[in-house]
Length: 100
Image (tube, rainbow, N blue to C red; front, side, top):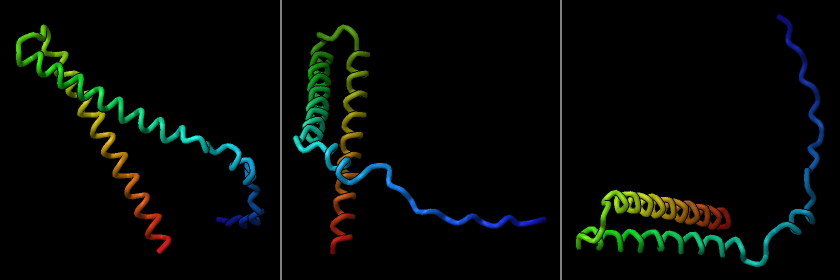
């Protein structure tokens, strides 16, 4: 069994320059705005679930499945939001640890 030699490693060429990367960053805060819109949507899902729960308790809700689906949606959205927040806090903590 013959072993072939490894070819020399050439220099890595960047795919984008620093100026191109800096030019594409969003400095208007639209990224943070979209996060806030996502949180607002979670709040709307929860308020919809709350109103359907009140309708179910008072007997005004025709189909209980509507409440069940809304409760599952709002629960899943809240769990996802909490997981994203935890990941963001972990990333911030890691960055602060690297700077120390």
